[in-house]
Amino acid sequence: MKFFIPTTARGDKIESIMFWLLKFNCVWPLAKYCPEYQNFIVNCLVWILLSGFFATFYAEYLFIKVNQKDISQVAEGLCALIIGTQGIVRVLHLIFRRNKMRDILQKFYKQIYIDKIENEKLHKNCENSLRLVYFMTWSFLLTLFFIYLSAAIKVARDPKSNSKPYLVKMEFFYNAQEPWKYAFTVIYTGYVGFCTACIISAEDFIVGTTLTHCAARYSILHEDLAQLYEKSLITFTSLNQQKADEIYDAFRANLKVIIKKQQNLDKFFQELQSFLSLPIFSLVLFGVFLMCTVAFALQRNGLSLETFRYFFWLVSICLQFLMIGSFGQRCTDAAAQMSESYYMCKWEFLLFYGDTKANIRLIKDISFGIYRSQKSLHLNGMNFIDLSSKSIGSAMSSSVSYFMFLNEMDKIG
Image (tube, rainbow, N blue to C red; front, side, top):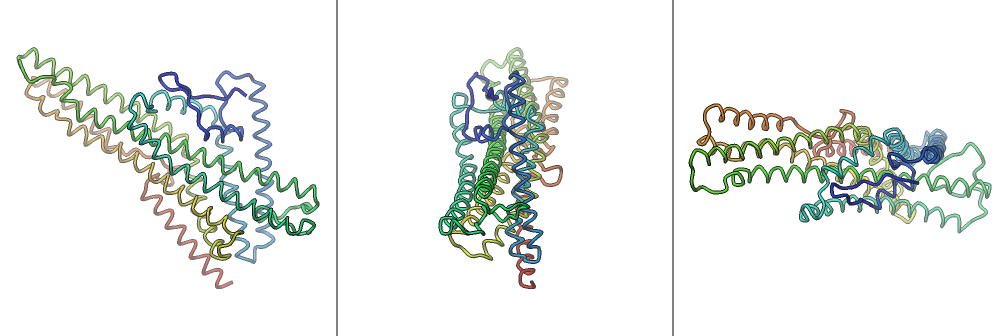
């Protein structure tokens, strides 16, 4: 398949293991001018994947319906149902906005991405910030590992049993205990679980990468503004009127370049917001309920080999919330700091060099930069929740409240 490969402004191709997680699930965009038959094949494969998601979703729903009077069983069933629903939402989003994703990523790597050649220190800081994403991914994969291990151990102990365990709590409309049907069921439900972990991890990696480099770009603009006067004023000697005019014009010209860069960065941020609005909404909405149900299942069943899945699952959810909250807050703070950087760029020192009209133009330029920087920039989920530390903290607090409610319902039941 001729998959899309993003390239930097220098023409370097960008490859990442996280991109391959999306390619493996056929939701990574194809190249712009790939053959039509490849589009057809990829679309067929991705709809086969979705059929597995929907079949698993229905089986989880049946389990909850059958065990609706047992709150402990319902909570365990909801764990799988919620993460499955989030997976379906994300897959559908990636399918229908595949071209938009390709355009945004190409624009990001062409205009925003900071490579080692441009600024090695900032590049390294951005890469280090993404370690949290890799920890979250490993937590997801460990969750899957213990799910598979627990089921394998039970089957190995009694392979001829008519009540062999499924990977998660499910109920099927067919007799899934027959040998070949059981093998088929475990294979496709296991594949769906692996795909869910891959898609969530890879998409969160894209969120983290774009936000981290956007914040770094804003920090570069802060430095440019801090050094603007010194760069324009090369020397303090021979301050005749001609030299003064050159200093003044150089300052305004460099200031306009910075304003233009900020406008382009803000524009990209708005495009990113448009693309990521639904994934962020689903992440927070489903994450709140998933956290409380997973925590409840872990508390209800205690810690053992079989329930290790819930421990790592809970860790991965917490890391996911902390990751998107910190990345979103960092980018919002960096954008908001632009107004202060404009005000502190020593523009008042140039008033001595210009006439009244020139000074008015300079003040208007500075005022424009300050004004546009006062508009808060942040990612949000369908205008429902902002991607900030405070909002994510509130979401996690709500999850704790739902967890306590489940405990009370369990005591009553």
